[in-house]
Length: 111
Image (tube, rainbow, N blue to C red; front, side, top):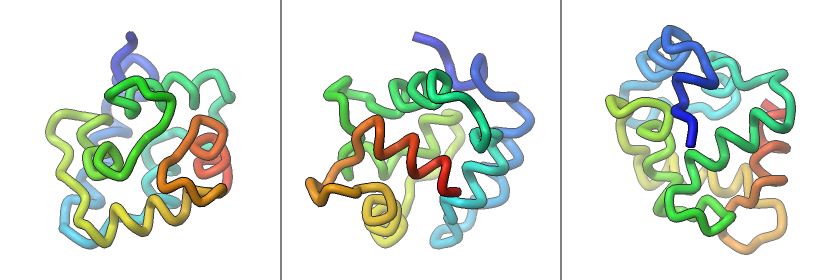
């Protein structure tokens, strides 16, 4: 499995994480843009999804979403409960309370 820093630029990851280091400040639109995901091909987005899907279930569940920033770099903070719920709501298109790979790629593209 690739590391996030092999897919995206380390400086972009750092910049994005620093921008949202305050609890409650997370904005997925801005984050995906800053981290360099916007405009990446589907294959790349699927690789990123694979890293964030820690239990390899094919979905990013709410518990994994909480750690989404840590998926980009170990120094990332945990999302607050409200941030996690907002991200889940934004990404979960079919109402199953988790984000599948297609939902993830759509979420990034909509950013």
